[in-house]
Image 1 (cartoon, one colour):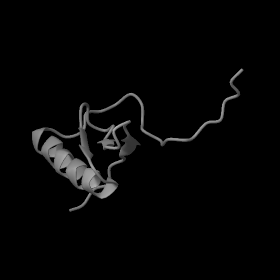
Image 2 (cartoon, helix red, strand yellow):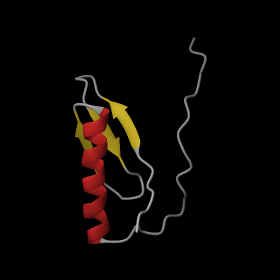
Image 3 (cartoon, one colour):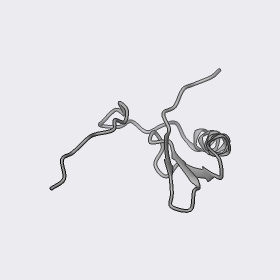
Length: 72
């Protein structure tokens, strides 16, 4: 059986890609490339699934948007 999980990908100032699955508290990983980071978060999610099912949340992850804000 396969399941889908949202992930958030960011890049730090050293160039590493940080990836997080907001469904599980503390489920994060990183990699030198996006591909490596995705492979690593897949392993981290598998570990989280072994430990426990996703906890019921009061909010549901919907997505991320880029927002433009005027700065004085």
